[in-house]
Length: 228
Image (cartoon, rainbow, N blue to C red):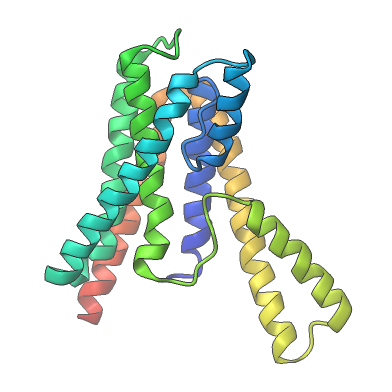
């Protein structure tokens, strides 16, 4: 994986996750853990959109399963296009997220059919991104959830203070720290950008991550053709 790809994907995750959260009653599209917390709050009478959050889990699973089926088919028959196909799949689902969001606007109730469809498609798209690294079996950083990255940053900083940055081990830790910080900053910038873009543009704001994903798909395909 290109060393900058994790940062770009983290930016997309932060961006889309924040758009979903702002637009769809606090829905997290990029990871399911937060939705479980919000479901608990909703059941207790705090918050709203319990059904929307409940649908997030099966939608996330469908995104992962769809990614796996498509990737395994292409890997067997058209291996050069398998990696780029996942970007195209995620872009297609985000376009569907955008369209259903526009149809659902103005969003006034979390249980409206188009609102539920919008949330499901957004979560499905981010399920694809979560599955991508594992399907490609790359050693990149987590780019949709930052908890592990924050933990690693603290551990690496303490390690550098304790043992220093000299030598092979120090260089390895410093390189990992730089990559992890870049991904975390990318996610933060994406989150801020997603919030500002949605407030000003509504669901057409999703066109930006779609364009980035299409560029990444084109780049991956071009690289595969050169190698092949």
